Amino acid sequence: MPDPRRPQFSAEQLAEVRRLQGLYPDKRGALLPVLHLAQDTFGYISLEIEEYVGTLFDLSAAHVHEVVTFYTMFFQKPRGRHIVAVCHNLSCHLLGAKGIIEHLKERLGVEPGETTADGKVTFLTVECLCACEQAPMMQVDDRYEGLLTADKVDGILRGLA
Amino acid sequence: MAEKILSKNFDVRDAHTLRVYRETGGYRGWDKARGMEPAAITEEVKKSNLRGLGGAGFPTGVKWSFIPKGSTAPKYLVVNADEGEPGTFKDRYILERDPHALIEGMLIAARAIDSRLGFVYIRGEYVQPWRVFSAAVKEAYDAGLLGKEVPGGGFEVVIHRGAGAYICGEETGLISSLEGKKGWPKLKPPFPAIKGAFGQPTTVNNVETLACLPHILTRGGEWFAGLGTKSEGGTRLYSVSGHVARPGVVEAPVSVTLRALIYEHCGGIPGGRTLKAVVPGGSSAAILTPDEIDIPMDVDGPKSKGSMIGSAGVIVMDDTVSIPDALMVVARFYAHESCGQCTPCRESTGWIYKMVHRIVDGHGKKDDLDTILDVAKRGGGTTICAFYDGAIGPYISYIEKFRSEFEALCRS
Image (cartoon, rainbow over all chains, first blue to last red; front, side, top):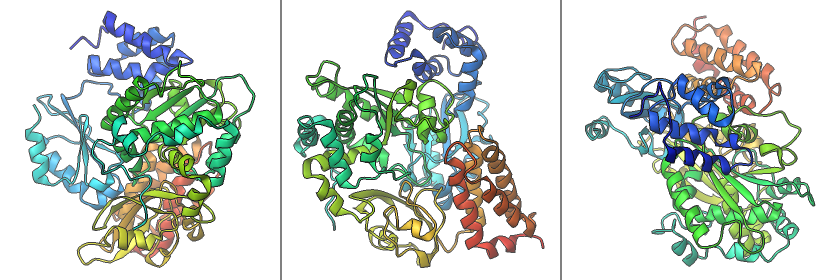
């Protein structure tokens, strides 16, 4: 993975940045999409990336920092290869999210907000992911996994490379 | 069983594809609308008594009519697909299972407000819905439904992914986010219809609201109005979760009672338990007790009990639930999601969460309950957006309706 401390998009990615910027009446509209692209490329959003992305938008690093820190999906430090994010909002709570979170703490050996020592999993608790019909549920990378039980969670963890 | 309208394609194989969507009658509403004057479309929608289904319940046709007419300025249609109200998941079903219904609804709305460019703001966590919807948009471009050069004006769609922030479901917060800023709501006026996204006239509509339009155009506003009650037309997608035997999205006419949703459509409370409380419209709606559920689930029904229909996310709690514990979870959510712009909201949501947490931990004092109620009530109406007013709903109703349960946890 390219170095987040010395960020540089490829020529192809820079073309994508320009395409995204062209979709909006003001190119700054593309800031969130480009930050997603940066995070997918570099793994997380470092201060250097904030500064770099700012130059692509004629925005100050402070503006980009303000945006990055506002949203929960942008990571400001290295994260695990996988994200396991358990919903702890009301419907999931009513149907046992607490037990799922305790189970994951034990299995992963880390607290919510932390990454396992082998760098495999970043474990999070999150607010409503709007899949309450499958409560208790969690997001594993791009996927929603619902109707969780301890056994089902174990199976999902085993499937993570 | 009433006729399924909005959910008729949810269980149809490959209904997310253009071919199957057309086979089920798709794009007929747009075929009709494209031959109509914009004002006539708006009139038809006013006749339908369609109310915004994202939470605020504002009449859709009236909202459109605020867009200045005759202006040459670009006008934008923005779709609020930033579904995030706890207990709500119906827009995800539309995006994943019937995406062309949204595209068709956008085409109709865009013609009504004379917009050539639309933005669909999808919450960042919705990766699969984003993928399915993006594929549907591509199909619509390839089929000549979307695009700059389409005869009769043309309409383009930009899909914009959010990055995790509940407040971006608030329409001006969403606009800030779309503009590349943190999602801080904006003072109104100016309203988005006058000065919205990128400073131009903008209508923000919810996914489900737009998905109603093809049916309204095909079968007429009067037909749609006739499905509902005096205060609201049509059917709605109710998201039902918590302690019910069959949680899920239920489509029903808005005259359906909360009791019928729980006991008939969703199979009642499982495990031989009884109903203790229910939230009728997403977590920002005041909680209701079992003697308050014989109400129609339109915009007026929950209001008659001091609550709101909101996003129609119904969260059911059985008699095993500790209400203080439930409030702690809800209060944590509002403390976490307050955007921090307005002092009453930023400070009160954090403080109230701490107080409820302390009570649940057994360290609360009985005075704390009055302090919470006082803080909650003072902040109402003092902030830029409706977020804090939404938070107050649960704070006050959980405590006032279940006070003895809180007191039992407090030191005297």
